[in-house]
Image (cartoon, rainbow, N blue to C red):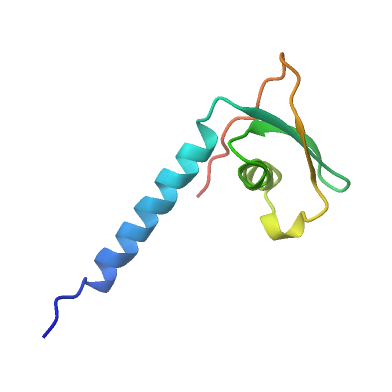
Length: 88
């Protein structure tokens, strides 16, 4: 028999990895302004355009796949980013 990981342990490992990835996305020094016709504009941490859209989707509390027409721009020097939303 091969060694396998218990399904509960596998789920915990995946959940922990998702939490670390999210915390990393929100704790980078770059900033972007993400604009969307229906959701408005928000300044978020930016390590890539995709990361900025993922962060904006969290602030707007929507699925990131719903915001295909968002635009990502460089933030102004004094812009303060949104805080990482509390996720239940």
